[in-house]
Length: 302
Image (tube, rainbow, N blue to C red; front, side):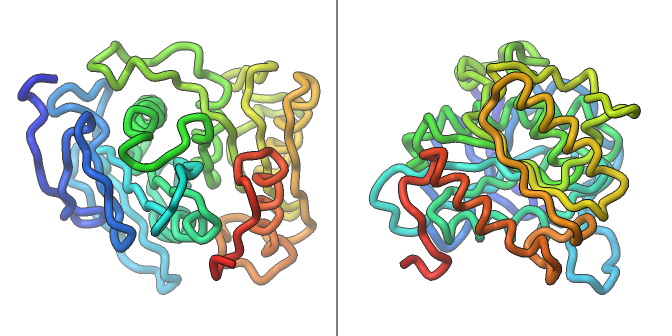
């Protein structure tokens, strides 16, 4: 890395975040996330967007939509006053690989994870129209997190991924394609392994390719990590993909749970008032059952 990776400033939405070298970060306070650039300066593989990162005009739904991301990063939300190393989850917002619903499926999720004793790490991956770049970003992200586990008070064997819609697809790709990196080694960070310890897929998209078959880019096998899937029957565009993915997990004898409800639609995050609204509690119980959370913690810390 040498001196090629210099500090720089940019914002999560319009561009204002201190970026620190990934090999020597200091722990963040519980009051604000620690924002880290994923790639050494001028060494990021793949393509980037032509335009500067920008936030799209509001639709009046309190969703922050960002696009033209060409400086991928992670925002680390640490658990306040954690006495022991915590699990960590890399959160991948959705947005059809065109935008990121950065608050609804990102920062709000990280805050919920904090409330149950998990470090939330929001991934800002490359969009629009850059699935290859996005996959390189999530591969680099899990290695950055593993490399900094001690500094960030994270348990190195309890690091998972969680994705919403397109972010669910991205998380599934990492869960099934961890045997080889998609970019050449850049530094010591890339010596860390790529396999997440668990995965949480919330209304994931693009998991199937018609006729009830799993996408060929998702080679589920017995090494695929334990997985929790959330979906509703009225998400007609994507629920079939979750069903075939679950079938593949079952065939491979991978520990999994599928929380399937009748109503809820798509893109609700933590904001649903329909039947699916209980998914966070179901997910928390699954994490406890898997031994990822040592004990249940309520949102008020009791």
